[in-house]
Length: 113
Ligand SMILES: [Zn+2]
Image (cartoon, rainbow, N blue to C red; front, side, top):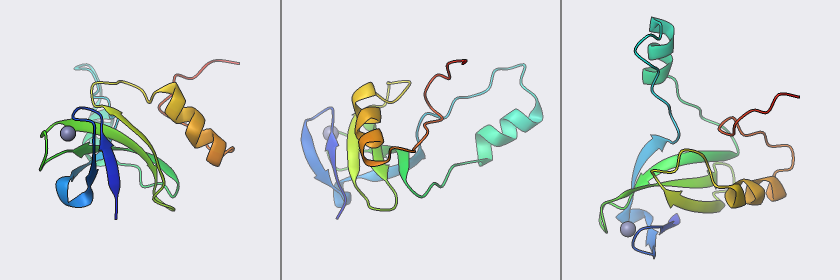
C-alpha cells in the first residue's frame, strides 16, 4: 500500500485518502511559444522506470495538493513537499542519488560545464 506524508497536515496518508494528479513540475510555455511547445505541454508526460516526481492531493484529508518523489520500480518514497515548490528540494535529490547514483534529474537547473 502506498503511504505518503502530507506536508500540510503532517499525517501519513494511505492511498485510499489520496488522489493522483500526474507528473509534477510541468511548466506552461509562454504566450509566444509555438504549437509544438503547447502540444508537448498538454500531451507529453514522462513515464520513467525509476525516480519520478508526481502530484498528489490529500483528497480525503486536508484537500491540498503536494508533490511526491518516488521510485516507480520499487515504490520507495523519497519524500514529499508542498506543491508550490518549483523544483525538488536538495535533500530529496540527495536521497534519490544515494539509491540511484546514475540518475539524472531533468528538473534541476542545468549548469554549463
Ligand atoms: Zn493533508
